[in-house]
Structures are given as structure tokens and as C-alpha cells.
Length: 161
Image 1 (spheres, rainbow, N blue to C red):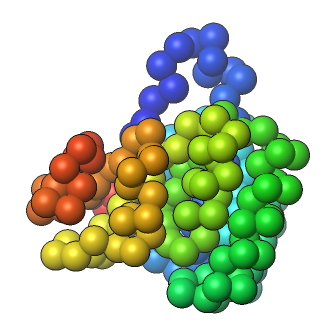
Image 2: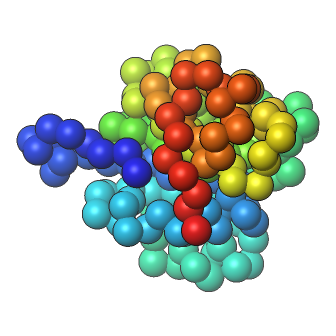
């Protein structure tokens, strides 16, 4: 996926993996061959399956539902301030959805590298999260060539699975 290019930065790299439960979490799990090589922590939902799968990981649980929910968006923005200031990751990597924009906004202010992977599920439409973060992502990845019409500067990396 996204490489941290300088070898001296490789050992110091720390990833913040942000994703909503369900398919977004599943997509992030498919990339474990990449992110598991680096120190990392999670920000996701506290569903029973995620609690079980991440029981040995460092996890911060966001406020859900997050999509189109103003109060939880504000709560997640405050969580982003607390978590990102405490953890100081070198990169925020996300597969979406609604929990991503608050973390990207604060990440941008803290000068953290921001990488967004648009979901494989949406082919003929742009996601709300994608539209919100596209303009200030450092790297925006798509999994379908047809998504180029919504995100012309995106990098096509193919499908995850």
C-alpha cells in the first residue's frame, strides 16, 4: 500500500488506524500485512466482534453512530484532539467512514501525514467521507478506476481482496 520511504523513518513510524466497524474494519484487516509491520493503534467502534479481534491491540473507541450525527461528530473531534496529541502518530490511515473526517481535520492541524483509502463498495458514487477529506489528504487511494471521475488526483491501487 503506502510505503514509508526513508529507512531511518521506518523504525520511528507510528500509525493511527481509523475505521468504522463492519466493512471498513474488514478492509483494514485485509491490509494487516502492511500495517502490522509498524507500531500502531486503532480508533474504531466498540462492537463485540471488534473488541474480540483487537483484544491484544491498543484501541481507542469512538462514538457511534457517526455518520450524519452532529453530536457524535463533535465528540469524535474532541477524541481526535486527545488521542492524536497523546499518541503523536506519523500517519493516519483510514478506510472510512464517518469517524475519519474528525481525525483527518485534527491530523492536518498537527501536520500528520493523512492517507485515505476509498471503500471498494462504492463504484458509481463518491462517499461522504471521501468528499470531506479528499481536498486535504496527503494520499488518496481508490480501488476502482471509475472513481477517478470523483477524485481526479487519487492514486489507483486496485482492489484489496
